[in-house]
Image: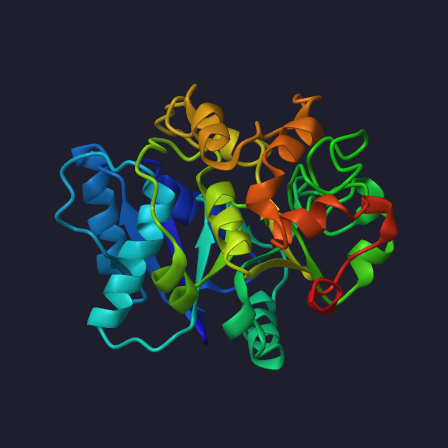
Length: 316
């Protein structure tokens, strides 16, 4: 495989055996799994050690952790890349999963690897790519029971309006049947990261103390430097909203993923407030427009969601 799987986890190590390994159609023993621990409780770190002892393909990549990490998700990308370099593991991509995400297809690993091999342009042109994300486990991969979410964003004209409301969802059919398309931000709960381009181009903003909007900022850094973010909609994952994990006895800290200053940090960096609730977004972007002349953000801003999915050549 030309990728490894990465988790950035704080407590909740029950999720591996009682959730991902239990329900995923894809066999996790086929892939290398790296875990970045964000200073879990001592008893949870013991659970992580037990997982590593039990499964030879699971590696704890920061075993000396003794404090919380600012911008933990993006920092975990850097830590994973360093681990892979140090151990001479030659893969181009890091597949990041939140702990409540798993593949929805039995052959997901093989199809992902095939996608990477058949679209070799992504190694030089693409910073991040993602997948279709479903939230109804019992219905499976059925668009009739609710369209998957295949990204999020604000700039594409019309994306902030219902039924999209800042998400690439409930889109015209061609979005779901195309091979790939350019997106502002892939679903960050399950995203592939280009190791080389990340290492060479991304500055980790440690002001992002929490998870919210941290990967969005990485997406915009990539676009600002001329690299694209894509979605391969035929590859599918499941992201649990409580249907399965509510039955697991977990340590819950709702403040862990969100902070009040995440939106402020994003606005200070990019010049506009993220989100469908910002009814003045297009005016805010226009006021920052000189910064974005000839950037991918500018081109997205002047496209319309109803024009259909756009490929890289539509921007070049």
